[in-house]
Image 1 (cartoon, rainbow over the protein chains, first blue to last red):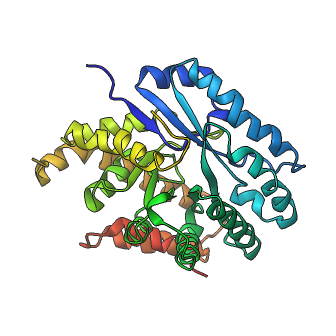
Image 2 (cartoon, rainbow over the protein chains, first blue to last red):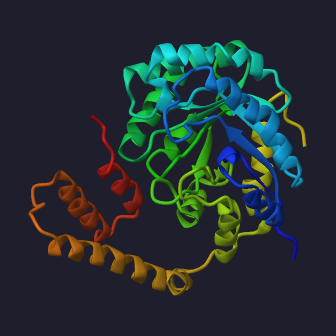
Length: 269
Length: 72
């Protein structure tokens, strides 16, 4: 049986080896979405983001294409580096030059980390930029103890802006105590399959069984930490073990990503 | 047809057993370690979570997520 085709809508290819790409291709990956993120340490200069954005819009698409994988990017300044508002402002000033590049889908991953006022100030600036240029958005919700409060803060912020179309927004890294409020708000809910700090394939399958497959995306968020670029195929196996139809599984790992991503002007498959 | 409760238990029993042993081993490890953590607020959260596990409620996962959430 050929591997089921899948799209990983949130993975940090910049921190994965080419061997990972080869394995992902063999396991059925046909496209990835890569949001700009924290590279493991705080960058010292806003200008370094220029090279990072070039990496996401020039180098990684070529590296993925060598393995038959389409690469799409989201650009922004991540929540971790958003605390320094002046620094963040300098990075945000770079974005307009890059948002028009052919593989860019919108603004992301933006969000909150420790739910501070400075993080929210930066986030509001990013959201305003995204909405002024009609971009889609992908939101990072905080880890662990900060997640519930941070998710609530993000949703309240978005609800207060009449320009926001929830169907064009993904609230990522949802877990059991946040997914309901995200789906009830009309947003897309990303479930991240990542060890220790986020969900397992089994818990993701549970959430799908409880809340249904509509407006749900599953992703690996595989990055420089212990993480698994084959997490989405593991989810496929977990769902098959439970007897779910391939049609439902395909909806989650292929059709749903396309339905969400095709709202971006630069998405085509 | 979704699996029955018995089929689900047949499938998940060994995983459940293994993870319960992991939790038990971690608690034993804490007991063996030097010093007292009786007043550590994290131990209260762990105790509350274990209480939820032993309850008949259906939304244990969500309850435990909220136990470990900071709403301040």
